Image (cartoon, rainbow, N blue to C red; front, side, top):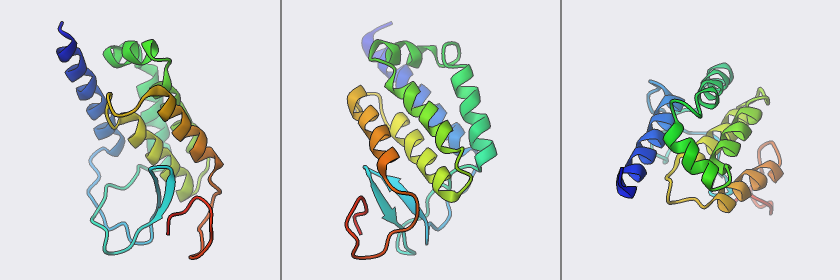
Length: 155
């Protein structure tokens, strides 16, 4: 198998994991949603395009458990590549599962951000960048921010 074919297989595997995370959910208006992206908190309004909602806590935990259980078999092409780079993708998926222990919408949004970052692209995230995203997300306080506050929010 050529390196390019291996890369395409990894990208397909990541796309399958991401598609499975959202399941058959339909895009909905994110108005009022507080989501995490690019290391910051974003408060979304009705002007934001419809987005796929993160799965429920139970569905998300079940799905991530299945992905991690099948990591070395079904997702072997991705697991081998990830292991050769230190295992950051797997750690991000494990952190997403831990984020779902928070039974609030914030837990779902944190898990969603971690799954999105882990599955964005094989070439887009270096392992140290992905580990830094996981660490930074853990430092962002839970709860809404008020306009004008400093901190992790870019409002």
